[in-house]
Amino acid sequence: MASGKQQRGFLLVVAIVLLVVGSMLAAAMAYMVATSGGSATDNLQSGQALFLAESGMEYERRCLAQNLDWYQSTTDPIAPNATGTCATATTTQTLGSGSFTVYANVPATMLRKRIPDNTSTADICAYTIDRFPASGRIQIDDDIAGSGEFVTYGAVNPSSATCGNRPAFTGIARGVSVGTVASTAAAHARGSNVYPVAQLITALTSTACTTIPNPFQITDNSKFLSAGTIVLDDGPGLNHEEIVYNGSSRSAGVMTLTGVSRCQDTGGVGPGVTWAANQPVTALLDGSVTASKEAEMVSVGTTGPANRAVHQTVQR
Image 1 (tube, rainbow, N blue to C red):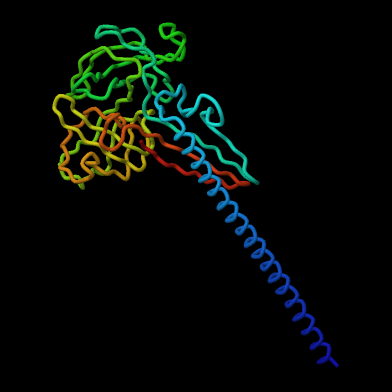
Image 2: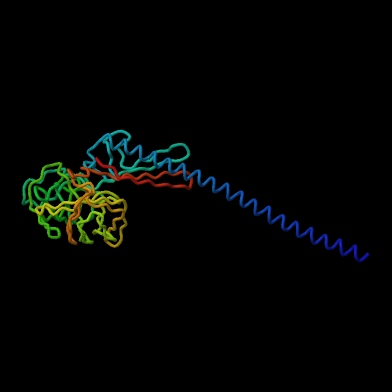
């Protein structure tokens, strides 16, 4: 009799254990199914966000193709057209269950008003001062060996009386030197290009195009694109090199370039040029071998909580 009771007690314990184990297995399976479903949703939304980001890039390419005077924009990010769908600097469009936000930055502007002679220190009127540092150096015109000039400015003014309450560089010193490269003050026509100027931190000690210093650093300048082209040019020395970089980071006044390719003005064949530290660095100059103008497009696609960003630098 006792033996039968013991068997029934044992079977009850086994049944309880099986119920507990079964409940745990059911909970685990439910969690895995829920996680799998959530992952599938996340992956789907991530793919949709990437598609939307790419759609934004196509939108911005069309806008940039409609007006090639990129450096004449009064804003940066630029508004490619004065009217129509491309008239806004930053565009957000809704597509289906998501949206994209897209804009384009440029590394230069133009003079809105001519500089009449080589002595004027009046405010320099530009189409925009957006993204230029609050003070620093600019290069006006493209050829330091010719009519090009380095200028130091002490401040920027979004509404200069000299310029008809429009943007200007102020506190001007003309014909300055950068590193060992001298420049001469000169008159400049309306529409002349205005470039930001940085300086080389890492000397380039080899003429071999494949020799890339690590890290490759220049002084930071907020107007420079996060990926694009820089130019090293010593003016009267007649040395010139165009360098492409695919990425960058900024910290404590230093811009570190990554994905660097030297000697782009010779198709990468070279030979390159040796460059000492502190020599001037500009954005892509009009009339360069690589291209004349460039813009960096940034598009962010969003679907639900998923965000995907795409960057691309275009030239013409």
